[in-house]
Every structure is written in C-alpha cells, then in structure tokens.
Length: 252
Image (cartoon, rainbow, N blue to C red):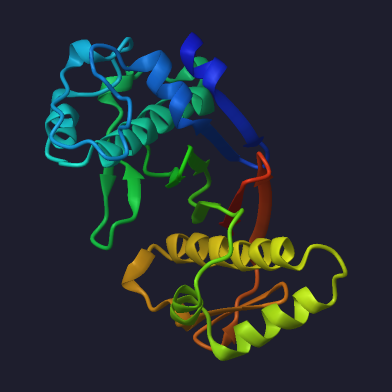
C-alpha cells in the first residue's frame, strides 16, 4: 500500500465485507500534485495535467485525457482525488492478492451514472465528495451500496428545503427539532443534512442518482419510504466527520 495513501486516508468501516474510507482533498493536493499551482483551485479553469504532475503513477493515459476534458479545476481535483482513493481502496481490499497496478484499475459508469469497477464487478462501489473531503465505499458479495458526504454546519435555504423534502418530511423535521432544548439552529441543520445524505446515499444505492425524483423518497424519523412503500432489509448509518460534515451509507 502506498505510503502517501496510508497517511492521508481515514477509515469509517472495514467490517462485513464493506470498506468505507474518506480523505482530506487538501492533503491529497499537497502530497500528490506537483508542478501545478493549485492555490484557489475552486475558482481556476482550463488547467492541463500530465503524468509528470503527480508524485505517484495512478492514472491511465485515457484518464489523463478525460481529466483534461473538464474545464473547472475544482471538478478536476475532485475527480482525480476520487480515483486515487478508490484505486488504493481496491488494493487495500484485496491485499497481497491484488496484483493489478493502479493505472490499470478502471472505474466506469452505468447508463444512469452509477460507478463500477470493470475488473472487479462483484464489488459494489459508491463515491462522494463535498467541500474538503472525498469519500468512497466498496462492498463485496454483490450487495448494493450508496454513500454520501455533505457539509453540515449551515442552515439550508427554504428553496432547497422545498426542492428536497415533502410536506410530511418538513413537518417531521420540525417536530424532531422541537423535542430538543439545545441549540435549535445546530440541531435543525444536523437533522436536515442527516436526512439529505441518507436520501442521496439511497439514490446511489438504487443506482438512479438524480435521475430519480428526490420527493419519491421520504425519511420520516428513522424510517425510509420509496414511492410510498417502506424500505426494509437495508442498513443505514450516519457518521460525523470533523464536526462539520456528515457521511451516510446504505447497503443491503
């Protein structure tokens, strides 16, 4: 396993045939990217990368070409950070039994955008990034898996709330928050983003992403309904990441 990778990655789970890791994107930039000015990368555009711009060889030539098709450096950084994380996770998952080199591990996409590993199709894969972090999950035994990470230390706008949640959900969120005597704003933000990450994770779990209507999925307390039918036989977990982010994972 690569030294840089081991020092950048943090683990959430490595049990039950599931591996969930996340990584600070700024650490990735500092250790892996050279020869490129990545300061203010969130607003820069039209950067062209080559193999010599990385301290580690982990991208194929086709991936370099794909990387350079993106205009936004923010998109480029998130894309390559996700690939670096996933490819090293594959090596970690299989240990010494994985002889394939990092550039040869191929991440492709299904028709509706769900990622998969061409050489390891029994593995389910989910990737997410938000703000400072990229996260990924691998699951064996052909189980589906969905993961989402989001910044959680702010109160979403009302327009966001109306797009994402049904009236029943909004009432349920308000009822849940009122039961607490603590910081109402913090609790409200946490509860909204907890449900939002679960929604996104579930849409990835069913391999639909944003091709499915957000309001087709409702989260009422800790129960999940899809097209008005309760979803059972799945596992849902939410984790705090550095107090400012939430990560939710669904598998079954």
